[in-house]
Amino acid sequence: MSILETRQFRWPDEAACERFAQALARCPQVSDLSIELEGGLGAGKTSLVRHLLRALGVQGRIKSPSYAVVEDYQPPALGGLPAHHFDFYRFNDPREWEDAGFRDVFAAPGLKLSEWPQKAAGMLPTPDLRLTLDVADDDSRDVCAEAHTPRGVALLTDLTQHLDAA
Image (cartoon, rainbow, N blue to C red; front, side):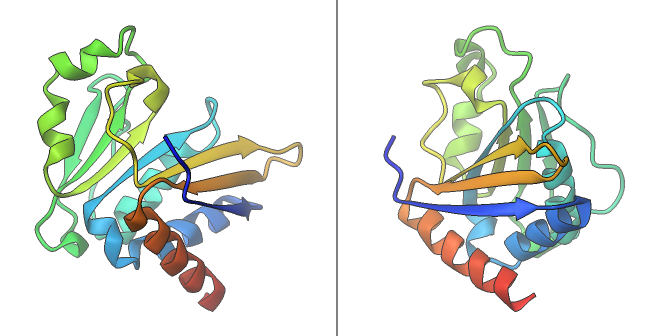
């Protein structure tokens, strides 16, 4: 899987994660995008998803899909398209992805957010964007954003502009 563009970000605190999610929500590409989120336990993957879904207008409880594998939402800001939050942490075999029928979900329009994508390795389509979150010694987060598609490159450009304007 080739990387077309890479950008580095730093979140010194939770508020920076929230600002990043809000900037991401303002990018038009987000309505039909696949984003993979990598990082260890406690790196902030689910926090980012919650902030993003809130910024897209989701009300009520935003649950972690750790046990259900996927939680579905209808964010008002996506113009009728769905958002799917996947957590593949409990997968023991990547073929579980196929058995669960997720191929159709990933082929349809909408936002797909995947935590622990390596647990479904070889089954997931190429993501538009991969975000790798690393916890630094001072508890801040170093975020590496990799665009793997032209849509991901456009998103990174828009995202950077929104963050610079904030």
